[in-house]
Amino acid sequence: MLKSLWAKFLVLLIAVVAIGLSATFLLRELMVKDFRVYLEGEREDRAYWVTAALESSYDKYSGWREESIIENTVWAMMLGIEMKLFDTDGTLIMDTDMAINTLSPFVKKRVMAISERRVKESDSPFSPYALFLGGRQIGTLEVRFLLPQKEKVFIRRSNRFLLISLLALGGIAVFLSIVFSRKMTRPIKALTSAAAAIEEGDLRSRVGTSGNDEIGRLSDAFNRMARKLEVQEALRKKLTSNIAHELRTPISAIRGELEGMIDGLISADKETLKSLYAEIGRLKSILNGIEDLSQAEASSLMIRKVHLHLQPFLRNITERFRKASMDKGVSLELSCDDDLAVGADPDKLSQIIINLLSNALKATEKNGRVWVRAMSGGDKVRIEVGDTGCGIRDSDLPFIFERFYRASEGGLGIGLTIVKELAEAHGGKITAQSSYGKGSVFTLLIPA
Ligand code: ADP
Image 1 (cartoon, rainbow, N blue to C red):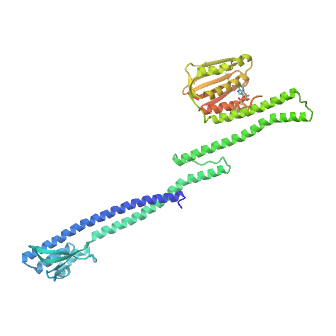
Image 2 (image 1 turned 90 degrees about the vertical axis):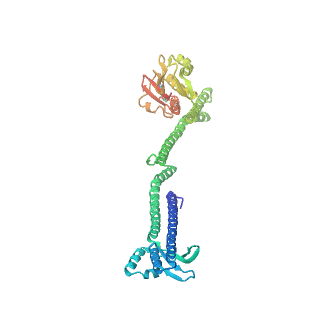
Image 3 (image 1 turned 60 degrees about the vertical axis):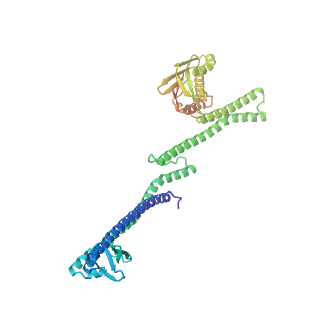
């Protein structure tokens, strides 16, 4: 039963109510006890008034005088005391009933009216008090107290109050546990069924989020996780089919040439072997590219940022392209503020710049221009790699950062994918602008 949240809430609330009620019960017991102690003291006082009055009457009349005893007994009755007076030899001299019966009907009615508000504690015994005068016992007084109505009312009311509290609080506990558990378990149930749907393969399954409490945040996190899973799954499918597609072309070429050789249609001369060798080189570079790509994807978890002075860092990289650009007849320029610095992983950042520079140089013909420009942009650093090369068609531009996407012959179409992965791993962004036939500018923004 305790497996469901509802039951747990119920138990919790009932426990809280039980603690509250026990505190109330304890308080009530203490109050009743104090009330009784108070009454006890007050009764003792009353009993002593009666003994003192009887002793002084005995003293005054030098013995038990009936009228005086009757008067005292009636007073005692009106004080809430039922009494019996015994002589030293144990004979009953007077009791409450006898005293009342001697009264005139009018006074009797009055006394009874006063006493009627009190109820007899029928089961309580009489307690004896010895009466003394001058060190000598003159008789025994036995008294028993009539229970005042208000004491009964007090106890009855406190009992009723306890019972009502028990029922009301118990009811409220059950009601609240139903309402709260419904409210809290609804999103959890939604999460459970969404997770089950994902397990079944429906990666589009999401939960409606509500509120900013822990469950709301859990739902948000769940949705983000599901979205990521969906994207990852789509990428995985695309990657698999891309790899198969990329590998099929060189493998078919190799197979075709080998079949030709086996059938004797193609001679196994140096030229054919060279072309086979080139195809195998292509296979190898595809595999290397895939390896680079998966490393770049994993690198978001392994970025080691250091404080980098961009000027010397970028100069170092551009110098590596100096010879190639001169061979091609392309000018290569670098402009960067002296004191510009950035927090970045040097290996990954140089991989980004190298990929962009080699693309730019590849796209640019003799007498063209390739440049690297770095500048500060508020809390970001902006690094541009531009060229006056062939440019990219508008129809290709939105896809150039996708895996294996090529806008021209040659290459694998993964260089820019790697650039994008690495830029995002730095918390940065890469964008491209291009005008077909005129040139392109790739802009990297990374947090300073
Ligand atoms: P690859 O690894 O084959 O170079 P990239 O991912 O680096 O692929 O680039 C994707 C495509 O974008 C390339 O096929 C190329 O056509 C185009 N491209 C990239 N950079 C430039 C550039 N600077 N100028 C013109 N085209 C470019």
